[in-house]
Image 1 (cartoon, rainbow over the protein chains, first blue to last red):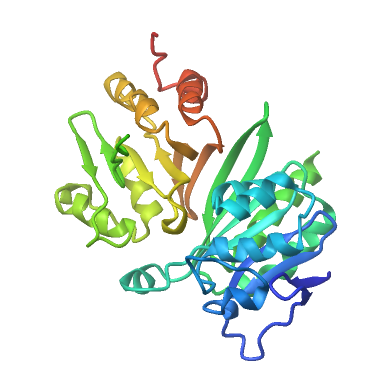
Image 2 (image 1 turned 135 degrees about the vertical axis):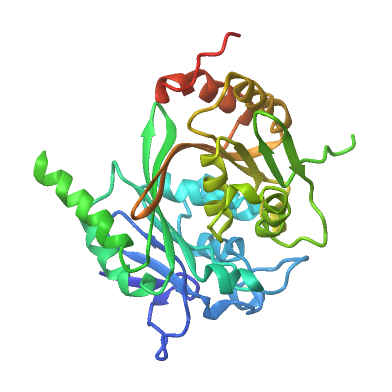
Amino acid sequence: MKKIDFMTNQEYVMPSDNNQDLKMAIILPDGTILMTDKSHDDEPFGNYGITDSERRFITVHVDYARVLAKHFFLDNDIIQEAAKTENLYTFLMEIVHSGCILFNNNTTYTGPMFILHQKHGQLLIPDDVVTEEQLASLQELEPFIQSFRSIEVKKFHILNGKDEAETIYSSGEDAISTYLGEKYGRKKIT
Amino acid sequence: MEERKLPKLLVLSDQQADSFYPQKALQNHMDYWDLYLQNHPELKIQSTSKVGVALEVAYHNRAIFMDISAKEADHFKSGLLILPNLPSLKLQQDIALLEDILQDFSFLEIVYNIRQNNQGWTYQSKISCSNIPSFIGEFLEDWSTVNPSVLKMKK
């Protein structure tokens, strides 16, 4: 499947030394993966055509969200507004509402927390509408999250217009295969 | 109008409410949890992550609220409310009071039906990005239908 680095809008190429953790990945319904790694941390916003009076360097998730929204989801007003106003949770939820799978690296890299907790991520899946193409692309993400100590896998269901989620914690090695095993297992039964 | 100060971490039990307000000296949620756990060694908490600790503490029949607002955009207040599986009516009534203090929030995840298996923690949750007080109210109204241990509260 096509992998695009959403920070550069070019094909995503894994760093040759593979020492940059995945920062965020979005799997569109057609299976295209928009992804980027931490190599853009601390780069000037100006490199991405964004001016900010308060922050000059890319440091946090919402900074990545702003660059993503500059190139993608241009017709989604909620995503555009959430990125502009730095409303991160609404931004992330609207990505899922758009039928996309989202991986989010929420590791605390500084201080003793990193020694204790190591790398942690979230995988948000719109379970009711996920496509075969997305499931195939999800398998391609596996090498990028294997080194994470824990992954919070959230299966979303929209019920009566409201978000409900089932969450399981898994290791980076097992997270995707466990989800896919459940998904395919359920399909065989029905 | 003066902005109301909200706790970074709030732990409600049948006996008491422990509130920890934002302090510059404390950097992340684990620092706040350390303060709480120093006073509650009897809980014998094993987890090292903020959510892991919260789930474990909730397993000891406590309700937990954490302000998880991003520092860079704290005008969008975001919270995580973790509910115990066997709450007393008193605890349910205390949880209902959160409707008022969380009215400035724009995101809330309510976690319930916490389970632990050999893989780790699992739970169910409901999430809202708008109108948080009514979201809490509606959840509490329905809580007894998703958890038979919860008594239906009379309005």
